[in-house]
Length: 253
Ligand SMILES: NC(=O)c1ccc[n+]([C@@H]2O[C@H](COP(=O)([O-])OP(=O)(O)OC[C@H]3O[C@@H](n4cnc5c(N)ncnc54)[C@H](OP(=O)(O)O)[C@@H]3O)[C@@H](O)[C@H]2O)c1
Image (cartoon, rainbow, N blue to C red; front, side, top):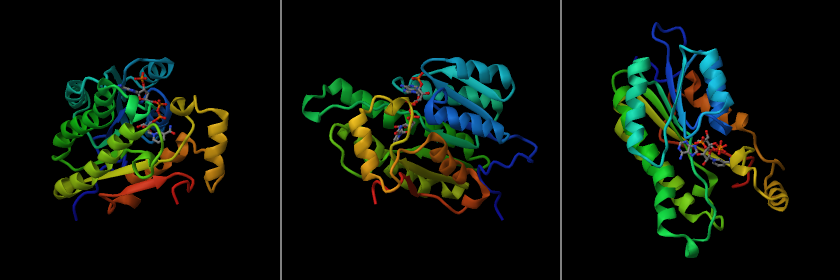
C-alpha cells in the first residue's frame, strides 16, 4: 500500500510540514494555531507581521516560519517555497488561504484592479502550488485551495473575485488528475460567510440578510472552516481528491 499523503501523522521520523498562505489573521491564523498544536511545522507569509506572527516565532522558534511576501508579486511565491524547502526540508501540506476581496461593479472596475484581483486570487496560488507540488512529488502531499461560495452562486459586485475563485476550483479538479499518480491530493474548500477581517465591514443590514438566507441562521466561524480543512489532512480523507467541499451553513442549498 502506498503511504498516506499529508495526513498529520506526527509519529514519522521527519515531522510534517505545512505551508499556509496568509497565516497572520482570520482563517489562516486559526489554521496556523491548530496545525502547530497538532504537531506540524508551519511556514506562512503575509504582507505584514503582527502580534500573532511575532508571538508564534517566539513560542515555536524551530517549528514556525513567517516571512513577508505579497501575492501581488507572484515571483515571490517560488522564492517562498524555496526558503521553506531550505528551512524545513520538505512540504507535505499546502493551504492556499490568502485572498483579496474587492467589491465593485464590473462596469466601473479599472483594468488594473481586474489584473490585481486575478493575480492575487488565482495566479499567485497557482505558482505557489507549482513550486510546492514539485517538492511533494518525492513523498506525496496534500493541496487545499480556499475558494468561496462566490464561485458557485452569483452575487453583485464580486464578479472578478468570483471568476478567480471559480478558476481555483477548476484548477484543483484538473490538477488532482495530474498529481494523483504522485500520491498528491488536491481539493478545494468553498466557505460561505464567516467572521474575519474580510467580513468586518459587512453592514448590519447585509449581515441580517445573509443570516436570514442561511438555513442555520448565522455566519460561520473560522474554526468551522478550519475543521473541514483539517478533515482533509486527516487519515479519514485519504481517498478524497478532486473535490470542492462547501461549508456555508446551507446558504447555497
Ligand atoms: N471571510 C469570509 O467570509 C470568506 C468567505 C469565503 C471565502 N473566503 C476566503 O477565505 C480565505 C481567508 O479569508 P479571511 O476572511 O480569513 O481573510 P482575512 O481575515 O482578510 O485574512 C487574510 C490573510 O491573508 C493575508 N493577505 C491578504 N492579502 C495578501 C497579499 N496580497 N499577500 C500576502 N498575504 C495577504 C493577510 O495578511 P496581510 O494583510 O498582512 O497581508 C491575512 O493574513 C480567503 O481566500 C478568502 O477569499 C473568506
